[in-house]
Image (cartoon, rainbow, N blue to C red; front, side, top):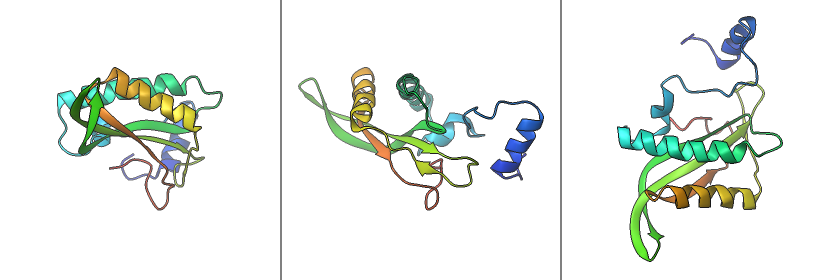
Length: 145
């Protein structure tokens, strides 16, 4: 499978009866969604943020074709309560595609994005900033790594 393109892998999956609506997942697992050194703490942080995103996406009438959280290497200043913190930044990535060869970012309502941001930063004090990736493929790729 390593040498095949996504559309070829999907044809094989169809042959074996794997549902076509299954969201793609990177071969290296969550580690590819952590920019920089991969540690257990970072994987746990990413899992928590991903769970919050998935919970919010599950309320949508039609979910994006693929959606995930990326934990960035940069840390930024934020405020929790009345104290200054130096926390992690996560990027939310939602795209629509038919074959994975090209993809358009999913335009989500600002209120919905604000809710996701609040849910993540209120539930995970180690995260102080949430950004939304609006890059299509091309010029970008679906995954960040």
